[in-house]
Structures are given as structure tokens and as C-alpha cells.
Amino acid sequence: MIVDGQSHCEQYLSQCRSNTIPLSTLQVAQLKASIHSARAALEACGDDQTHSRHELARILEFQNSLLAPIRKIPPEILSYIFMFVATPIYCTRPNYYTSPKLQSLVFRLTWTCSWWRCHVVAEPALWSSFKIDCDVPFRSYTADQRAFVRECVARSGDHTSLHWNFRNVRNIRSWSYLLRHAKRLETLHCESWNLQMLHDELRRLFKRLHKKASEDSAEIFFPRLEHLSLAIPGVSDMQSLANIGPMDDLFAKCPSLHTLSINLLRETDPIDLSHLTDLRIGSYYMGRSFSALLSKCPMLQTFTVDRFVADPDLFSRSSSYIPPLMHHTNLTALKITWFDRHCVPGFWKCVRLPNLTFLRVSVKGFRTSGDGELQGLLRELREMVLTSQSMPSDTLESFLKELNVYGLDV
Picture 1 (cartoon, rainbow, N blue to C red):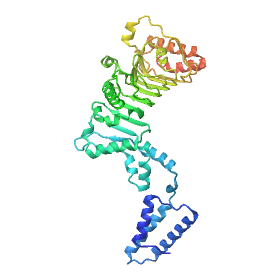
Picture 2 (picture 1 turned 90 degrees about the vertical axis):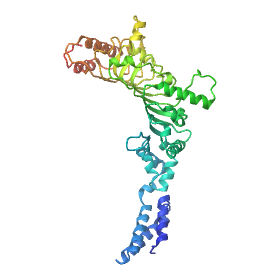
Picture 3 (picture 1 turned 135 degrees about the horizontal axis):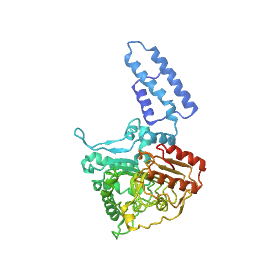
Picture 4 (picture 1 turned 60 degrees about the vertical axis):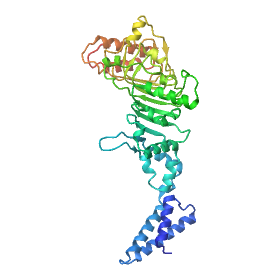
């Protein structure tokens, strides 16, 4: 049977867009027969039958497309593939040439065909990630853009975990439509130290939504938060730390928090570390001892720290401080990325890590041989590991000798 004409072309185009593929063996055989007939008709067309050749070529293209393997991928596998392709919905900031706009590869997935569009729109996880520059108030976007942001949030459903990346929180109040879904947050990256503004807005919003009677009532803002990253500006050197105020208690109750990445953490910071398994401190930990930190992190498995330095306020209030004995069985990896003279003496005392299997130390902060301070710090570290009996002594001694690039006697 030879097929041609506009009606056949539209029929196959509609099937391609809706992914109406042949399912049975009989339907596949019939489609292959139609492809054979269309190919024969195309070959029989003369050079003067340009329109017919064009229509038959399009029909062949659509027919072959219906047999493409990608059309047989199960929906759950397709969703998994889309998750690799999709990027967060990025609310960009304007510049001299452009106004604020929304960008994401997930939008392009909806433009491919009606089948993909229906699948993408119905998959809440593809609409759950947002990257927002809060320097730009929400009202700066057009009415259509604001409506589309609301539509994207609606497509994420009511129960899907959300992932937010905030740059600054100066105009966070104008993004209240998004903030009302904060209890669904699983991942939060925030580039700002002014968390008080975010805290105040969440408290105001939740009080209105949940009819809270007391302004001082303890509120769990992030019951599902698992991954938190706080990039605090201004943490550049030791002298800058005095100008950075204490952390707000916004994250004082995070019962699901497992991963924390932060560039400044103080021993006194009110943040819930009780379920933490991975702690990464990019610049400074300010405290009196490692055991005091571990006492707050009973589940910790991996600890990465740049420098551990003294907190002047704590030491001035307790000059005779004795760290508590901490026998921590969960910590298996310890990574010290900048070991230098600013590190507080006695930091490793009263700590036992019997299951430690990975140790990485850098002494790049030192540039002179025979530095007495470094010798003392490395002796404390060696004593802690040896006392923990977590690795053979000869292995540890060999490791420390590799560190001894400046002739240090440890």
C-alpha cells in the first residue's frame, strides 16, 4: 500500500508528538509494511513530482521515528535521564542589556514533543530546584514571569523535597511565595551571613500561615533539611573574624541535617549537629577543643577543616578549661587542609577515634624548618591517633615523616 498526502503526514506527526507507538507484533508489522510502501512510492516519484516527494519523505521520517528505541524507554527510566539533564530554575539578575529572566534546561525538555512535555510537567522532582539572586526583588520580574515562578512551584507538588540556592537575602521578603514552602527543603545553599533577615521573614510567614500565638515559640523551620551550605562573606583572614557577628539560631533545630558545608563555625553557634555525618569547614573552626565539637556530632563520619583556631571569648571566660573525654566510634575520615601556627594548642587532647581509617594533613602554612609550634601540634595529633589505636604505629610514623618536609622532629 502506498501512502501519501497531507492527511497521512499529519496523522504520523500527531502520533510522534503524542508518542503513540505500535505496541503489538501485528502493529509493528503493519507499520514496517507502510514504511516499505512509502519508500517504494518515493523511489517511483519522478523529478517533476517535487511536492509528492517532499510529503513522502516526511511520512518516512515520522514512520521511522515511531520505531526509534528511545520511544520505548519506560517512564521511570526517562525521568531518571531527565534528572541528569535538568538544571535548577535560575532567576537571573539584570544587567545593562537584559532584564531579569528565568532559565533552566528543564524548559527545553518541554519543547521537544507533547509526550515529553506531559511527562516533564507531571514529574515534581524536575521542578523542585531553584537558584535565586535575592538582590533582585521578585517584583522586578514581569507579571508573566512571576506567574510562571508560581507555576513552577505548583508543579513541584506538595510533598516533593525542594532544593534552593540563594545568593544574598537582602530582598528575601519579596520572595515570600517561595519561602512558604521552606518546610519541604532538603538542600539549601545560602551565600549570606545576614541570616537574621531570612529568620525574621520565615518566622513572620509561618506565624501567619499556622496562626502561631507566640512570637517566641520554638519553631522548626527545616524539618526535612539534609544538606546545608553556608558561604559567609568576609572570611578572608584571622583579622576579619572579629568583624563577623554570631550566627542566628535559624538552624538550631534541624533533625534531618546530615551534611554541613560552612566556611566559619564557632563552638557557640546555635546549629543542630546531632545527626550530622559530614562536616566541612572551609576556613575556620573557632573553639577550644576537638572533643567539644565531637560531643555535638555523635553521628559524624567525615570531618574536613581548614584551620582550628582559638575563640578569644571562650578562652577568656574559662582559662582553666579541661576538654571532656570523647570516645567517638563513628568518625572514620579526618582531613586537615591547613595546619599552621594559628591552630590552637591542645585541640586534639582527650579524643579517641578507634575507627579512624583515613587521615590527611597539610602543613602548607609553615615555611621554616624546626618550627617548635608545629612540632607540638603534630605531637598532639600523633598522640591522639596512637592512643586511639586506629592504625598501625609504623604506618602513622611513616605518614608523619612524609609531612616532615621542613626538617621537623616529631
